[in-house]
Image (tube, rainbow, N blue to C red; front, side, top):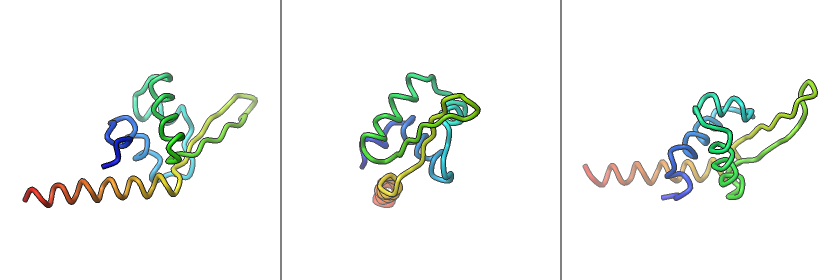
Length: 92
């Protein structure tokens, strides 16, 4: 299994990004109930692994950071889920 995705917070981030094109940091923070520092640290690990892409811009003169799941991140998530399913099927 993918160790990066064993974290509840990182798995939640990937799940939030799965169905969206881009998601702003503030939206992720609100939906996951995470602090700035906690969310930032977990997102950074996913970016370093190539699972998440980051885009920084200004909207109405305010900085905005948003994220999207990369193809590598989607593949890692799909593999992780398949491994979990195989584990469950092996226990039946």
